[in-house]
Length: 309
Image 1 (cartoon, helix red, strand yellow):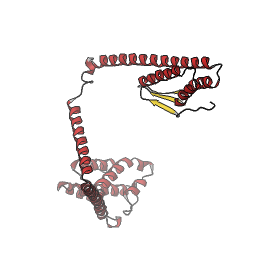
Image 2 (spheres, helix red, strand yellow; image 1 turned 90 degrees about the vertical axis):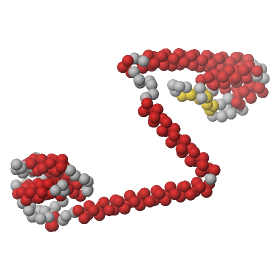
Image 3 (cartoon, rainbow, N blue to C red; image 1 turned 180 degrees about the vertical axis):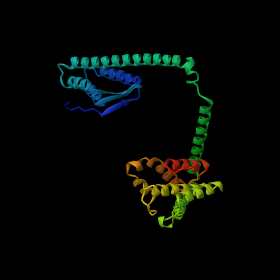
Image 4 (tube, rainbow, N blue to C red; image 1 turned 135 degrees about the vertical axis):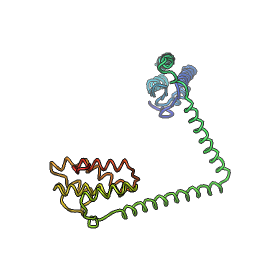
């Protein structure tokens, strides 16, 4: 538009009602400026490039170019000034009517939807759905109490800057202490795991029967960690005796699993995998074990083909 530009790229409205009010005000300004290029120029300079309206359903954007073009034509062309002003007013009136119709329709639809929703929720099968439960009220009170506690804490910190600094340093110190404690615990856990590792060369060369006997003795005295360790080695020795695994006690549990490659060996993979999992979790991972864990390992040993009574 020659000589005129929009005052801003866009103008936003939080709802339909405020936008309708703006349209009516703009129309009133155009009427007041009727026949005056100077006043029309002021109206044109106040128009944004776009109007943006937020509704409950969506976000809309309206280009004001038709209105700006009509006003520019009324300003620059004296012969068509009246027709251009009328065109501008008609455009505003049409847009206002459309927006008002939308607002009325949307309000009716929402009213119907709310009525339908309440009718559905009042049915017997939805009894209590639209009411707040006792647990919800307790949870809400706890959240409100915690929120008030945080707000009160920050308010006190704002009144006492020195106290706020001391509190922040205390929080930082506690955080560092917690991190250090966690690292020490991880290190201690790894140290225990390393101490629990028994190199293959140090594993006693016992028969499968002897491993089972030792496992049962450990179970009888409540040492289920040692009992599961013995049952695992009973399974390994049994597979070595049957020729499924090579007689090599230096291999790791995962390497024994990977050695089960033949057709006959694949049938043993699942029970050996379960035994290996329990060994890693309880013997190396230091997780607590009980009688059920031991009995499960004994069943896995039987599935490997070891003859248990």
